[in-house]
Length: 390
Image 1 (cartoon, rainbow, N blue to C red):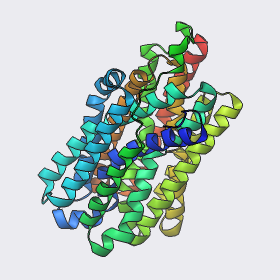
Image 2 (spheres, rainbow, N blue to C red):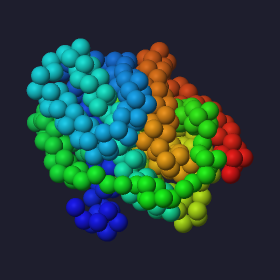
Image 3 (spheres, helix red, strand yellow):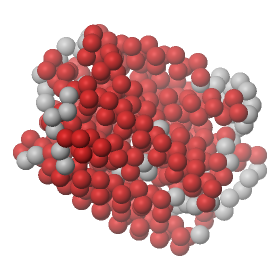
Image 4 (spheres, rainbow, N blue to C red):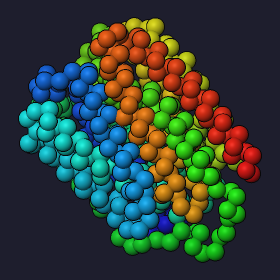
């Protein structure tokens, strides 16, 4: 393998950090993006789709903390292999053996269990191999994994799944996922901290603050969960074609990637802790959800893409802020906050799907906007606690 800090080595590490998350979330996002088509075939609707998403993320939350600790024992390379092999296996099984809702749910739960290793392993790799002055950008790029997964799922609908069937989409993605294994380095690497870099214990976040940060993430991720699970269905409900909805999700995933990379680069250049940038994005996302609630047709489509960039542009900053203050145990620390993300991502689809069935998409988007406001309040509390400890 090239030197970790060479251009080639950097690209390889960052690429595998993105792709390990992409592979392990493809089963869920392929399902969500092609839900109108798959739902007709297997017999489920918005409420069941919300249940599937909730089950996936709540299972991932249950294993997240333990997985983060396990990553520190087995190494991030082995943890990545677990996620990649597990994710590709789930994709292949859905493509070939799933004939009804019970087995589909079982496959998603299996995928969620291996997904629990994906984020801690990627975070550990980036924290171990690169200095803090580059981590804002790198974590922004790494957190392109989820929108990349959605981007690929959105593109697969009009180009493949509507043409030859949804099972082919899962099968092709399973084959592509296996190819990611070659990017995982075979040698174990050491963190710069192992070479004697000492950081004061006071610079680390207290566990209480980590839990508050997990709460903020759980609230903020409500929009992300709604977009990823119901974005395509909501667009179709507004009169947009299934193919058009797929292209919108593709554009939204791309917009989220650009936003995450852009704010990460801005944080590095400013030497910031990332909290103000997070608050700005979530504030803009709150406004965008109101537009989603009140708009129709083309305006809704534009707002949907903007929502991906604003309300879902902050995860890289959140991880960066945790790693920056917990450099000795980045996998374990980020796993605590990631558990909050998974809880929010699990509960939100249940609430959103239920509100859609009982009321409307409009009311559901308003509910999402309210949870983003609560996230801003908690995030400000976290920011003040961090500043007080510096």
